[in-house]
Image 1 (spheres, rainbow, N blue to C red):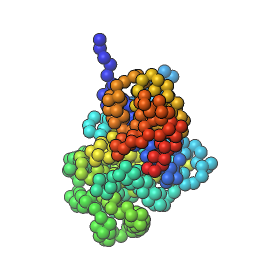
Image 2: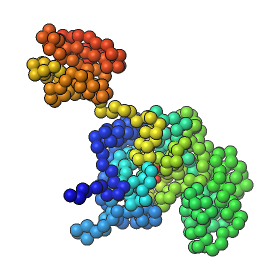
Image 3: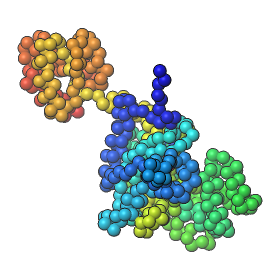
Amino acid sequence: MATFQTLPGFREFYPEDLARRNHVFRSWRQTASRFGFSEYDAPVLEPLELYKAKSGDEIEGQLFSFTDKGGREVALRPEMTPTVCRLVGARANALKRPIKWFSIAEFFRYERMQKGRGRCFYQFNADIFGEPGCEAEIELIALLVQCLCAFGLTEQDFYVRLSDRNLWFYYLESLGLDEPRVRAMLSAVDRHEKYGDAAFEPYIKEFGPLDETVKSRVLGFLGVKSLAALEQVLASQPDSRLAARLADWRRVLEALDAMGLAGYVEVDLGVVRGLAYYTGFVFEAFDRKGDLRALAGGGRYDDLVQKLGGPALPAVGFAIGDMTFSLLLEQRGLMPKYIDAPDVYCVIGGANERRAAYREIHALRAAGFRVDYPLRETAFGKQFKAAAESGAKLALIFGSDEVARGAAKIRDLTQRTETEVPREQVVAHVRDFFSAG
Ligand code: HAM
């Protein structure tokens, strides 16, 4: 008989996989709420129109789209940004500013599969609406860093590359490029890291040969890796917008430094982001050592809410993907072995002891402890093995001698110590053990 397989690039989550995913989501939720962000959700299926020309050619080419039974052109969401803009735009006047929202949701892109890239994946999205100043970027970069540090990752493990599409716009305009040329050049810059000079080919095809001075200036700008280098390149530029922009850069970097996060952030004008809607600062997080693709990406997109029919509303946000991030945690040994471990595993003699054990098992669960036990009568040795493998901290032993004495044994499975306690004191003892940490 033919067996059905998942579609290429789609994932199934067996309980141990789901436990890991939940562990990651739990921590992201907790971190976002500590930063004062509120959670929202939205439909998986959206009008195709929402992504056309808004997300950019790359995502548009990767859409899972079809015509529904009512003749509507629809697409599985490839990202959250247009959707959240619609949500916020529709109630912009009623929402308290700044609007700080987050979501954890599944997305679909028909991409070529590779390590850390699939056709369905989850993202943690966090966005701030209504704040035109770079304080929004500061808040979001701090949140991004903390979402990763919450798992024990440090500045040795990852870093955030910070760049600025405004700077690029002003700089390229000062080199004499008009808007269509600027856009084409930015997409060349986006691809340059991967394809080298071949990244300029689409530009040359569209606009003819590339002026050598422009090319060398672009390559020089793309190589800027510090604020000092940026100040130096811009020193000779008369454009006052560039000077004002430098002041924003200093504010962002100084604030992140004051938070103790300077070691996580690097100036890197090589990042411009492929998505079409970004208008200002852009950033991406990467693993420092590995060959993994981006862990997260985001930036400012001040025009999108309005382009989608809402009021003019400045916005900044980012998304962390679950796939590269989980790979990084596994590689660094930071994914806990026991996520859904019970607190207590009960080891039970025969049918008589089982009756006695039921009372304590239920009382412990009602008191808030995670308790597991074998559903069937099983040899003691196997039960102790199961207790050890479960990851439980305590074993509660109901042997015939203990039960006859109206007692149970509590074994600390880490310290390998054991005490006998009267059965009516089991809950209190377990509580003491866990509250002592
Ligand atoms: P993005 O850079 O397209 O940005 O995606 C953000 C993150 O989602 C990536 O860094 C990556 O970790 C993950 N990701 C993207 N595509 C895939 C895939 N095919 N497989 C696995 N993981 C993937 C956005 O989506 C923007 N909407 C982020 C944003 C929010 N900008 C403002 N607010």
